[in-house]
Image (cartoon, rainbow, N blue to C red; front, side, top):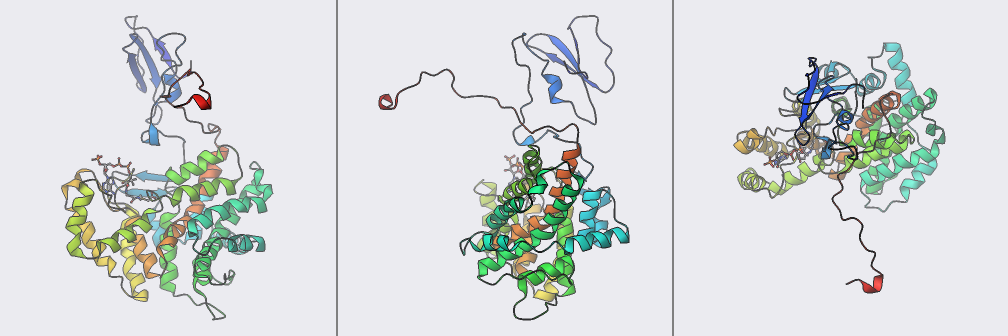
Length: 445
Ligand code: CMC
Protein backbone atom coordinates (compact mmCIF):
# COMPACT_ATOMS: atom_id res chain seq x y z
CA UNK A 1 0.00 0.00 0.00
CA UNK A 2 1.43 3.44 -0.84
CA UNK A 3 2.71 5.32 2.18
CA UNK A 4 0.31 8.21 1.79
CA UNK A 5 -2.79 6.08 1.73
CA UNK A 6 -4.51 4.49 4.67
CA UNK A 7 -7.47 2.16 4.50
CA UNK A 8 -10.28 2.01 7.03
CA UNK A 9 -13.08 -0.48 7.28
CA UNK A 10 -16.59 0.78 6.82
CA UNK A 11 -18.51 0.64 10.06
CA UNK A 12 -15.30 0.48 12.05
CA UNK A 13 -14.41 2.87 14.74
CA UNK A 14 -13.75 5.50 12.07
CA UNK A 15 -10.52 7.27 11.40
CA UNK A 16 -10.12 10.94 12.03
CA UNK A 17 -9.87 12.44 8.55
CA UNK A 18 -7.05 14.92 8.23
CA UNK A 19 -7.94 18.09 6.37
CA UNK A 20 -5.83 17.42 3.30
CA UNK A 21 -7.16 13.98 2.57
CA UNK A 22 -9.88 12.45 0.49
CA UNK A 23 -12.11 9.72 1.85
CA UNK A 24 -13.51 7.36 -0.74
CA UNK A 25 -15.94 4.53 -0.20
CA UNK A 26 -15.90 1.62 -2.62
CA UNK A 27 -19.56 0.70 -2.88
CA UNK A 28 -18.65 -2.70 -4.34
CA UNK A 29 -17.09 -3.75 -1.05
CA UNK A 30 -18.18 -1.12 1.43
CA UNK A 31 -14.55 -0.35 2.21
CA UNK A 32 -13.41 3.18 2.82
CA UNK A 33 -10.02 4.57 1.85
CA UNK A 34 -8.31 7.77 2.74
CA UNK A 35 -5.78 9.29 0.37
CA UNK A 36 -3.62 12.34 0.72
CA UNK A 37 -4.31 15.51 -1.24
CA UNK A 38 -1.15 17.41 -2.18
CA UNK A 39 -1.18 20.58 -4.27
CA UNK A 40 -4.78 19.90 -5.25
CA UNK A 41 -3.98 16.44 -6.57
CA UNK A 42 -4.36 12.86 -5.47
CA UNK A 43 -1.91 10.20 -6.59
CA UNK A 44 -3.37 7.74 -9.08
CA UNK A 45 -1.22 5.01 -7.50
CA UNK A 46 -3.03 5.53 -4.18
CA UNK A 47 -6.09 4.00 -5.79
CA UNK A 48 -4.35 0.78 -6.72
CA UNK A 49 -5.11 -0.49 -3.20
CA UNK A 50 -8.83 -0.30 -3.96
CA UNK A 51 -9.66 -3.91 -4.83
CA UNK A 52 -12.71 -6.13 -4.76
CA UNK A 53 -10.56 -9.07 -3.66
CA UNK A 54 -6.92 -10.04 -3.33
CA UNK A 55 -6.65 -11.10 -7.00
CA UNK A 56 -8.00 -7.82 -8.28
CA UNK A 57 -5.35 -5.64 -10.00
CA UNK A 58 -6.71 -2.56 -8.23
CA UNK A 59 -8.42 0.60 -9.39
CA UNK A 60 -6.82 2.69 -12.14
CA UNK A 61 -7.60 6.24 -13.27
CA UNK A 62 -8.98 6.39 -16.84
CA UNK A 63 -8.06 9.65 -18.51
CA UNK A 64 -7.58 9.50 -22.28
CA UNK A 65 -5.90 12.72 -23.45
CA UNK A 66 -4.84 13.58 -19.88
CA UNK A 67 -7.69 16.05 -19.48
CA UNK A 68 -7.48 15.94 -15.70
CA UNK A 69 -4.15 14.35 -14.97
CA UNK A 70 -0.98 16.18 -13.94
CA UNK A 71 1.99 14.18 -15.20
CA UNK A 72 4.75 16.24 -13.60
CA UNK A 73 5.64 19.05 -11.26
CA UNK A 74 7.04 22.02 -13.12
CA UNK A 75 8.48 25.42 -12.29
CA UNK A 76 8.66 26.68 -15.85
CA UNK A 77 5.31 27.99 -17.05
CA UNK A 78 2.19 29.00 -15.16
CA UNK A 79 -1.15 29.28 -16.93
CA UNK A 80 -4.41 30.39 -15.37
CA UNK A 81 -6.77 29.42 -18.14
CA UNK A 82 -9.89 30.85 -16.54
CA UNK A 83 -8.36 34.31 -16.24
CA UNK A 84 -6.17 34.27 -19.35
CA UNK A 85 -2.83 34.54 -17.49
CA UNK A 86 0.49 33.22 -18.82
CA UNK A 87 3.78 33.53 -16.91
CA UNK A 88 7.24 32.08 -17.48
CA UNK A 89 9.25 31.46 -14.33
CA UNK A 90 6.86 33.91 -12.67
CA UNK A 91 7.24 36.76 -15.20
CA UNK A 92 4.14 37.80 -17.12
CA UNK A 93 4.04 37.30 -20.86
CA UNK A 94 3.09 40.98 -21.17
CA UNK A 95 6.32 42.09 -19.41
CA UNK A 96 8.47 39.64 -21.31
CA UNK A 97 7.16 40.68 -24.72
CA UNK A 98 7.54 44.35 -23.81
CA UNK A 99 11.03 44.24 -22.30
CA UNK A 100 12.84 41.06 -23.37
CA UNK A 101 14.22 39.52 -26.52
CA UNK A 102 13.44 35.94 -27.48
CA UNK A 103 16.95 34.80 -26.58
CA UNK A 104 16.62 36.40 -23.14
CA UNK A 105 13.27 34.62 -22.64
CA UNK A 106 14.87 31.34 -23.78
CA UNK A 107 17.62 31.84 -21.19
CA UNK A 108 14.96 32.45 -18.55
CA UNK A 109 13.07 29.28 -19.47
CA UNK A 110 16.17 27.14 -19.42
CA UNK A 111 18.07 28.63 -16.48
CA UNK A 112 15.15 29.73 -14.34
CA UNK A 113 16.32 33.34 -13.88
CA UNK A 114 16.61 36.38 -16.09
CA UNK A 115 20.25 36.75 -17.17
CA UNK A 116 22.56 39.55 -16.12
CA UNK A 117 23.91 41.57 -19.07
CA UNK A 118 27.10 39.52 -18.96
CA UNK A 119 25.21 36.21 -18.93
CA UNK A 120 22.99 37.36 -21.77
CA UNK A 121 26.00 38.43 -23.84
CA UNK A 122 27.66 35.07 -23.32
CA UNK A 123 24.45 33.15 -24.09
CA UNK A 124 23.85 35.21 -27.24
CA UNK A 125 27.45 34.65 -28.33
CA UNK A 126 27.18 30.89 -27.78
CA UNK A 127 23.94 30.63 -29.73
CA UNK A 128 25.31 32.82 -32.53
CA UNK A 129 28.45 30.75 -33.06
CA UNK A 130 26.45 27.51 -33.26
CA UNK A 131 24.02 28.54 -35.98
CA UNK A 132 25.95 26.74 -38.71
CA UNK A 133 25.09 23.12 -39.46
CA UNK A 134 27.39 20.40 -40.76
CA UNK A 135 27.55 20.40 -44.56
CA UNK A 136 26.17 16.86 -44.59
CA UNK A 137 23.01 18.15 -42.88
CA UNK A 138 22.64 20.51 -45.81
CA UNK A 139 23.10 17.64 -48.25
CA UNK A 140 20.63 15.56 -46.25
CA UNK A 141 18.05 18.31 -46.73
CA UNK A 142 18.82 18.61 -50.40
CA UNK A 143 17.64 15.01 -50.74
CA UNK A 144 14.02 15.90 -50.05
CA UNK A 145 11.54 16.19 -52.90
CA UNK A 146 11.08 19.73 -54.17
CA UNK A 147 7.55 19.85 -52.70
CA UNK A 148 8.37 18.28 -49.32
CA UNK A 149 6.44 19.87 -46.46
CA UNK A 150 8.93 21.97 -44.45
CA UNK A 151 7.64 20.50 -41.15
CA UNK A 152 8.40 17.01 -42.44
CA UNK A 153 11.87 18.22 -43.38
CA UNK A 154 12.37 19.89 -40.02
CA UNK A 155 11.27 16.94 -37.93
CA UNK A 156 13.50 14.46 -39.73
CA UNK A 157 16.47 16.82 -39.77
CA UNK A 158 16.22 17.60 -36.04
CA UNK A 159 16.21 13.82 -35.51
CA UNK A 160 19.21 13.53 -37.84
CA UNK A 161 21.14 16.01 -35.66
CA UNK A 162 21.39 13.26 -33.04
CA UNK A 163 23.68 11.33 -35.40
CA UNK A 164 26.00 14.35 -35.66
CA UNK A 165 26.27 14.79 -31.89
CA UNK A 166 26.45 11.27 -30.45
CA UNK A 167 27.87 12.66 -27.21
CA UNK A 168 24.39 14.00 -26.44
CA UNK A 169 23.37 10.46 -25.55
CA UNK A 170 25.09 11.07 -22.24
CA UNK A 171 22.14 12.89 -20.81
CA UNK A 172 23.65 13.03 -17.33
CA UNK A 173 26.64 15.05 -18.49
CA UNK A 174 26.04 18.75 -17.73
CA UNK A 175 28.25 19.97 -20.57
CA UNK A 176 26.55 17.69 -23.11
CA UNK A 177 23.15 18.88 -21.96
CA UNK A 178 24.19 22.50 -22.19
CA UNK A 179 25.62 22.03 -25.67
CA UNK A 180 22.47 20.26 -26.84
CA UNK A 181 20.38 23.18 -25.56
CA UNK A 182 22.61 25.70 -27.32
CA UNK A 183 22.81 23.71 -30.55
CA UNK A 184 19.07 23.10 -30.78
CA UNK A 185 18.17 26.75 -30.20
CA UNK A 186 20.93 27.89 -32.57
CA UNK A 187 20.35 25.42 -35.41
CA UNK A 188 16.58 25.02 -35.63
CA UNK A 189 16.19 28.45 -37.34
CA UNK A 190 18.90 27.45 -39.82
CA UNK A 191 17.11 24.18 -40.61
CA UNK A 192 13.80 26.05 -40.88
CA UNK A 193 15.24 28.57 -43.33
CA UNK A 194 16.92 25.81 -45.37
CA UNK A 195 13.58 23.99 -45.59
CA UNK A 196 11.95 27.18 -46.87
CA UNK A 197 14.66 27.83 -49.48
CA UNK A 198 14.44 24.21 -50.55
CA UNK A 199 10.73 24.52 -51.24
CA UNK A 200 11.45 27.47 -53.54
CA UNK A 201 14.37 25.81 -55.24
CA UNK A 202 16.66 28.59 -54.00
CA UNK A 203 20.21 28.15 -52.70
CA UNK A 204 20.38 27.92 -48.93
CA UNK A 205 21.68 31.04 -47.20
CA UNK A 206 24.33 30.50 -44.54
CA UNK A 207 23.86 32.23 -41.17
CA UNK A 208 25.21 35.76 -40.75
CA UNK A 209 26.78 36.07 -37.31
CA UNK A 210 26.77 39.87 -37.41
CA UNK A 211 23.00 39.88 -37.12
CA UNK A 212 20.72 39.32 -34.14
CA UNK A 213 18.85 36.03 -33.81
CA UNK A 214 15.66 37.18 -35.59
CA UNK A 215 17.58 39.31 -38.11
CA UNK A 216 19.75 36.36 -39.02
CA UNK A 217 16.65 34.26 -39.56
CA UNK A 218 15.18 36.86 -41.92
CA UNK A 219 18.51 36.98 -43.75
CA UNK A 220 18.67 33.18 -44.14
CA UNK A 221 15.10 33.25 -45.43
CA UNK A 222 15.03 36.25 -47.73
CA UNK A 223 18.54 37.35 -48.77
CA UNK A 224 18.91 37.15 -52.51
CA UNK A 225 21.81 38.76 -54.40
CA UNK A 226 22.64 41.48 -51.88
CA UNK A 227 25.89 40.94 -50.00
CA UNK A 228 24.43 42.00 -46.69
CA UNK A 229 20.78 41.61 -45.78
CA UNK A 230 19.33 44.62 -43.97
CA UNK A 231 16.17 43.62 -42.16
CA UNK A 232 13.53 46.14 -41.18
CA UNK A 233 13.71 46.65 -37.38
CA UNK A 234 9.94 46.50 -37.09
CA UNK A 235 9.85 43.06 -38.71
CA UNK A 236 12.64 41.59 -36.63
CA UNK A 237 11.07 42.98 -33.45
CA UNK A 238 7.66 41.56 -34.41
CA UNK A 239 9.29 38.19 -35.02
CA UNK A 240 11.05 38.39 -31.66
CA UNK A 241 7.73 39.11 -29.93
CA UNK A 242 6.00 36.25 -31.74
CA UNK A 243 8.80 33.93 -30.69
CA UNK A 244 8.59 34.97 -27.03
CA UNK A 245 4.85 34.27 -27.19
CA UNK A 246 5.42 30.79 -28.57
CA UNK A 247 8.41 29.81 -26.45
CA UNK A 248 6.64 27.58 -23.95
CA UNK A 249 3.16 26.60 -22.94
CA UNK A 250 3.54 23.99 -20.20
CA UNK A 251 2.26 20.46 -20.84
CA UNK A 252 0.83 20.82 -24.34
CA UNK A 253 0.77 17.96 -26.85
CA UNK A 254 4.29 18.47 -28.22
CA UNK A 255 5.88 19.12 -24.82
CA UNK A 256 4.22 15.99 -23.55
CA UNK A 257 5.70 14.18 -26.56
CA UNK A 258 9.19 15.52 -25.74
CA UNK A 259 8.83 14.48 -22.10
CA UNK A 260 7.28 11.11 -22.99
CA UNK A 261 9.94 10.22 -25.54
CA UNK A 262 12.70 11.81 -23.42
CA UNK A 263 11.66 9.69 -20.44
CA UNK A 264 13.18 6.70 -22.25
CA UNK A 265 16.50 8.58 -21.75
CA UNK A 266 17.01 8.97 -25.48
CA UNK A 267 19.18 11.92 -26.56
CA UNK A 268 17.56 15.38 -26.60
CA UNK A 269 17.64 15.76 -30.41
CA UNK A 270 15.48 12.66 -30.79
CA UNK A 271 13.16 13.82 -28.01
CA UNK A 272 12.78 17.27 -29.60
CA UNK A 273 12.14 15.65 -33.01
CA UNK A 274 9.14 13.96 -31.36
CA UNK A 275 7.99 17.41 -30.25
CA UNK A 276 8.26 18.74 -33.81
CA UNK A 277 6.20 15.77 -35.04
CA UNK A 278 3.47 16.45 -32.48
CA UNK A 279 3.44 20.14 -33.32
CA UNK A 280 2.89 19.30 -37.01
CA UNK A 281 -0.70 18.17 -36.37
CA UNK A 282 -3.62 20.49 -37.29
CA UNK A 283 -5.04 20.48 -33.77
CA UNK A 284 -1.74 21.77 -32.36
CA UNK A 285 0.84 23.90 -34.20
CA UNK A 286 -0.75 23.15 -37.55
CA UNK A 287 -3.74 25.26 -36.57
CA UNK A 288 -2.16 28.54 -37.76
CA UNK A 289 -1.86 27.03 -41.24
CA UNK A 290 -5.45 25.80 -40.99
CA UNK A 291 -6.68 29.28 -39.98
CA UNK A 292 -5.33 30.83 -43.17
CA UNK A 293 -6.82 28.08 -45.31
CA UNK A 294 -10.13 28.62 -43.53
CA UNK A 295 -10.01 32.40 -44.12
CA UNK A 296 -9.21 31.83 -47.80
CA UNK A 297 -12.18 29.51 -48.06
CA UNK A 298 -14.57 31.92 -46.32
CA UNK A 299 -13.27 34.57 -48.74
CA UNK A 300 -15.60 37.43 -47.77
CA UNK A 301 -17.59 38.70 -44.81
CA UNK A 302 -20.95 37.78 -46.37
CA UNK A 303 -19.96 34.11 -46.15
CA UNK A 304 -19.27 34.19 -42.40
CA UNK A 305 -22.83 33.33 -41.22
CA UNK A 306 -23.00 30.22 -43.42
CA UNK A 307 -19.54 29.17 -42.32
CA UNK A 308 -20.42 29.55 -38.64
CA UNK A 309 -23.64 27.59 -39.16
CA UNK A 310 -21.54 24.74 -40.60
CA UNK A 311 -19.26 24.86 -37.54
CA UNK A 312 -22.24 24.79 -35.20
CA UNK A 313 -23.69 21.80 -37.07
CA UNK A 314 -20.40 20.03 -36.40
CA UNK A 315 -19.20 19.95 -40.04
CA UNK A 316 -15.88 21.51 -39.12
CA UNK A 317 -14.13 23.54 -36.43
CA UNK A 318 -13.49 27.23 -36.25
CA UNK A 319 -9.72 26.99 -36.43
CA UNK A 320 -7.75 29.30 -34.13
CA UNK A 321 -10.56 29.14 -31.59
CA UNK A 322 -10.76 27.15 -28.39
CA UNK A 323 -8.12 25.78 -26.09
CA UNK A 324 -7.83 22.91 -23.65
CA UNK A 325 -6.61 25.25 -20.89
CA UNK A 326 -7.75 28.78 -21.77
CA UNK A 327 -11.41 29.30 -21.14
CA UNK A 328 -10.91 32.99 -21.75
CA UNK A 329 -9.13 35.11 -24.37
CA UNK A 330 -5.68 33.61 -24.94
CA UNK A 331 -3.30 36.38 -23.72
CA UNK A 332 -0.93 35.53 -26.58
CA UNK A 333 -3.66 36.22 -29.14
CA UNK A 334 -4.26 39.63 -27.57
CA UNK A 335 -0.55 40.58 -27.79
CA UNK A 336 -0.25 39.33 -31.38
CA UNK A 337 -3.31 41.31 -32.38
CA UNK A 338 -1.59 44.44 -31.04
CA UNK A 339 1.47 43.80 -33.24
CA UNK A 340 -0.38 43.01 -36.45
CA UNK A 341 -0.62 46.67 -37.43
CA UNK A 342 3.12 47.29 -36.94
CA UNK A 343 3.92 44.49 -39.35
CA UNK A 344 1.37 45.71 -41.86
CA UNK A 345 3.04 49.17 -41.77
CA UNK A 346 6.02 47.51 -43.41
CA UNK A 347 4.40 44.86 -45.54
CA UNK A 348 1.13 46.54 -46.50
CA UNK A 349 -2.17 45.37 -45.08
CA UNK A 350 -3.56 41.88 -45.42
CA UNK A 351 -7.23 41.95 -46.44
CA UNK A 352 -7.79 38.75 -44.46
CA UNK A 353 -7.30 40.77 -41.25
CA UNK A 354 -10.71 42.46 -41.64
CA UNK A 355 -12.24 39.09 -42.32
CA UNK A 356 -10.59 37.59 -39.21
CA UNK A 357 -11.72 40.49 -37.01
CA UNK A 358 -15.30 40.15 -38.25
CA UNK A 359 -15.21 36.37 -37.80
CA UNK A 360 -13.95 36.78 -34.24
CA UNK A 361 -16.65 39.33 -33.47
CA UNK A 362 -19.48 37.20 -34.87
CA UNK A 363 -18.22 34.09 -33.07
CA UNK A 364 -17.86 35.88 -29.73
CA UNK A 365 -21.42 37.20 -30.11
CA UNK A 366 -22.72 33.69 -30.74
CA UNK A 367 -24.03 31.60 -27.88
CA UNK A 368 -22.49 28.40 -29.31
CA UNK A 369 -18.98 29.78 -28.79
CA UNK A 370 -19.56 31.83 -25.63
CA UNK A 371 -21.34 28.98 -23.81
CA UNK A 372 -18.40 26.67 -24.57
CA UNK A 373 -15.90 29.40 -23.62
CA UNK A 374 -14.30 29.30 -27.06
CA UNK A 375 -12.08 32.35 -27.66
CA UNK A 376 -9.32 33.12 -30.17
CA UNK A 377 -6.10 31.29 -29.39
CA UNK A 378 -2.50 32.11 -30.35
CA UNK A 379 -2.99 30.76 -33.86
CA UNK A 380 -5.90 32.94 -34.86
CA UNK A 381 -3.79 36.00 -35.72
CA UNK A 382 -0.21 34.68 -36.02
CA UNK A 383 -0.80 33.30 -39.52
CA UNK A 384 -1.81 36.74 -40.77
CA UNK A 385 1.61 38.08 -39.77
CA UNK A 386 3.38 35.14 -41.39
CA UNK A 387 1.39 35.66 -44.58
CA UNK A 388 2.28 39.36 -44.53
CA UNK A 389 5.93 38.27 -44.39
CA UNK A 390 5.24 36.41 -47.66
CA UNK A 391 5.63 33.03 -46.03
CA UNK A 392 3.75 30.16 -47.64
CA UNK A 393 1.24 28.54 -45.26
CA UNK A 394 3.36 25.37 -45.08
CA UNK A 395 5.98 27.41 -43.20
CA UNK A 396 3.64 28.62 -40.45
CA UNK A 397 4.06 25.66 -38.15
CA UNK A 398 7.80 25.79 -38.70
CA UNK A 399 7.65 29.38 -37.42
CA UNK A 400 6.04 27.98 -34.27
CA UNK A 401 8.63 25.21 -33.89
CA UNK A 402 11.58 27.64 -33.88
CA UNK A 403 10.75 29.33 -30.56
CA UNK A 404 9.05 26.29 -29.01
CA UNK A 405 12.44 24.59 -29.18
CA UNK A 406 13.58 26.53 -26.08
CA UNK A 407 10.47 25.41 -24.19
CA UNK A 408 10.96 21.79 -25.21
CA UNK A 409 14.59 21.93 -24.10
CA UNK A 410 13.70 23.58 -20.76
CA UNK A 411 11.01 20.95 -20.11
CA UNK A 412 13.33 18.12 -21.11
CA UNK A 413 16.05 19.41 -18.76
CA UNK A 414 13.55 19.71 -15.92
CA UNK A 415 12.30 16.18 -16.53
CA UNK A 416 15.78 14.66 -16.55
CA UNK A 417 16.49 16.08 -13.08
CA UNK A 418 13.09 15.20 -11.65
CA UNK A 419 13.55 12.29 -9.26
CA UNK A 420 9.84 11.46 -9.43
CA UNK A 421 9.96 10.79 -13.18
CA UNK A 422 10.36 7.35 -14.69
CA UNK A 423 9.88 6.06 -18.20
CA UNK A 424 6.40 7.21 -19.25
CA UNK A 425 4.16 4.22 -19.62
CA UNK A 426 0.41 4.67 -19.36
CA UNK A 427 -1.92 1.83 -18.52
CA UNK A 428 -4.79 0.71 -20.70
CA UNK A 429 -8.24 -0.75 -20.27
CA UNK A 430 -8.14 -3.81 -22.51
CA UNK A 431 -11.40 -4.18 -24.40
CA UNK A 432 -10.41 -6.78 -27.02
CA UNK A 433 -11.03 -10.50 -27.22
CA UNK A 434 -9.01 -13.06 -25.28
CA UNK A 435 -7.97 -16.69 -25.46
CA UNK A 436 -9.08 -17.21 -29.07
CA UNK A 437 -8.47 -20.42 -30.94
CA UNK A 438 -5.80 -19.83 -33.66
CA UNK A 439 -7.24 -20.40 -37.17
CA UNK A 440 -4.95 -21.60 -39.97
CA UNK A 441 -4.88 -19.26 -42.98
CA UNK A 442 -6.68 -21.62 -45.37
CA UNK A 443 -9.49 -22.10 -42.86
CA UNK A 444 -10.26 -18.40 -42.42
CA UNK A 445 -13.46 -17.10 -43.94
N1 CMC B 1 -14.75 25.15 -33.23
C1 CMC B 1 -15.98 24.68 -32.93
N2 CMC B 1 -16.27 23.99 -31.83
C2 CMC B 1 -15.26 23.78 -30.98
C3 CMC B 1 -13.95 24.24 -31.22
C4 CMC B 1 -13.72 24.95 -32.40
N3 CMC B 1 -12.52 25.44 -32.68
N4 CMC B 1 -13.16 23.87 -30.21
C5 CMC B 1 -13.92 23.20 -29.35
N5 CMC B 1 -15.20 23.14 -29.82
C6 CMC B 1 -16.37 22.55 -29.15
C7 CMC B 1 -16.35 21.04 -29.24
O1 CMC B 1 -17.03 20.57 -30.39
C8 CMC B 1 -17.05 20.67 -27.95
O2 CMC B 1 -18.42 20.88 -28.13
P1 CMC B 1 -19.48 19.87 -27.44
O3 CMC B 1 -19.29 20.07 -25.96
O4 CMC B 1 -20.80 20.29 -27.95
O5 CMC B 1 -19.08 18.48 -27.88
C9 CMC B 1 -16.56 21.73 -26.97
O6 CMC B 1 -16.26 22.87 -27.77
C10 CMC B 1 -15.33 21.31 -26.19
O7 CMC B 1 -14.33 20.95 -27.14
P2 CMC B 1 -13.23 19.84 -26.93
O8 CMC B 1 -12.89 19.26 -28.26
O9 CMC B 1 -13.66 18.90 -25.86
O10 CMC B 1 -12.06 20.70 -26.39
P3 CMC B 1 -10.55 20.27 -26.30
O11 CMC B 1 -10.01 20.88 -25.07
O12 CMC B 1 -10.42 18.79 -26.43
O13 CMC B 1 -9.93 20.89 -27.61
C11 CMC B 1 -8.73 22.23 -29.11
C12 CMC B 1 -9.05 21.94 -27.64
C13 CMC B 1 -7.70 23.34 -29.17
C14 CMC B 1 -8.12 20.96 -29.75
C15 CMC B 1 -10.03 22.62 -29.82
O14 CMC B 1 -10.58 23.78 -29.24
C16 CMC B 1 -9.82 22.82 -31.32
O15 CMC B 1 -9.87 21.85 -32.08
N6 CMC B 1 -9.58 24.09 -31.78
C17 CMC B 1 -9.30 24.33 -33.18
C18 CMC B 1 -7.86 24.01 -33.46
C19 CMC B 1 -6.94 25.07 -32.89
O16 CMC B 1 -7.15 26.26 -33.04
N7 CMC B 1 -5.85 24.59 -32.26
C20 CMC B 1 -4.81 25.47 -31.71
C21 CMC B 1 -4.75 25.37 -30.23
S1 CMC B 1 -3.73 26.67 -29.50
C22 CMC B 1 -2.15 26.36 -30.06
C23 CMC B 1 -1.59 25.06 -29.67
O17 CMC B 1 -1.70 24.66 -28.51
O18 CMC B 1 -1.01 24.44 -30.52
